[in-house]
Amino acid sequence: MRAPNIKQRQLERNLRNFTIFRLLFSARFYYPVFTILFLDLGLTLEQFSILNVIWALSIVFAEVPSGALADIVGRKNLIIFAATLMVLEMSLLTLATIIDPSSLFLLMAANRILSGLSEAAASGADEALAYDSLCSLGREKEWPKVLERTTQIVSIGFFVSMILGAVLYESTFLNATLERLGIDWELSSIRTIRMPVVLTLLTSLLLLLNTFGFHEETEPRNTQPKPRSNFIAKDAFKQMLIAAKWTLNHRFVLLIILSALMLDSVARQFVILASEYYRIIDIPINWFGFIGAGMSVLGIVNAKFSRYLVENHTPLANFLVLCLILMVSLIGLCFAIPFYGAIFAAGAFSMIGLVRFQSSFYINKEVESAQRATILSFKGLALNIGLGAASILYSGYVAFLRGRDPMQSSSTDDIFIEALLSLPSYFLILLISIFFFSRKYKN
Image 1 (cartoon, one colour):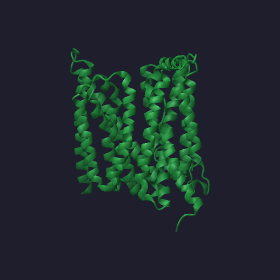
Image 2: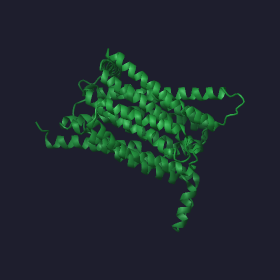
Image 3: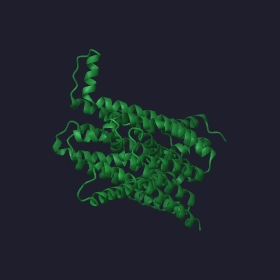
Image 4: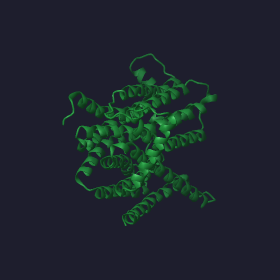
């Protein structure tokens, strides 16, 4: 039986709002100057590192509980909560550009906690609501098409935000442009520092307005009757246990999550190191932002490629294709070919989008609506744990290489290149481990 016209329009609007939500949530204009911004505000490198740890821990601890809450109190409520947290996060970052530096670190710590909680709250909830809307319309087979369109639009938005954010931050460039246009304005660096931040604050407000347009077809469980907060916490914990047991008992979903962890962790570990790699292969620093923007545009091609793979090939065949792409990329990176080495970097950047597209497709296809957001959050948690493990092992290996050379005859660049050799080896070990685990798990 077809849904009434009003209900159908509400469900279709969810799909548009899902794309808009992903676009506004990810297109942050301060990303191309993220590290520089924090340092220019007055933080030290050590404080910046501590803030990144705070951010990561906030995501890890809140990832799965937020997914469970989305399944209990409603996905729309969690999406609104995530957008509200982003508004608060960006408000604090805007405030950080004008306050007394003595309280800067505490303010930025609060900013990082809000950012992590916002990421965790959004993870899984928006996707679960969009997929459920397709199911209600009887069009769940269109999910690859929705993912493709969303990924392409987000990639374009990220490209624009990368370029515009970098341009707005640079006072010298802006003043020179104003002078060429005959405009007698002089923008100080203090003012231009705020521009990418304020622009992101404005987009966060648009994001919040967009979330109110979502429609949730089923009533969240907390409306009949409305439980106390301690009961919600108990229900969330119970939901997590049920979803964890379900995942462990479903070999296909578990292997999808583990495969995503393997591919994503190695690729993201290189992406973290990308700017240093570009410097070593003699790419000018003022090209970095354009390269980053170019990598984001690859998302348009990757989305179409991913849709082709999931609609025409088996999960195993697709997994092997992604493994081949990443292995070729990692091996090519180890040669550190001047300038042209950036071509191999494209494989690692592309892998992140390819993995997320395909894991989303397969998990949503297998999981029931009642626990969809929770299990998607398990996937998000697994990816973050995988990256953390890869980062710790990489840092340990770099420390080992330095300790092996007490006379420091090797340059920092030499150590960096030698450490890169560990990535294809680490990936191969993970691949073999996945293979043996899948065989044992099947038996």
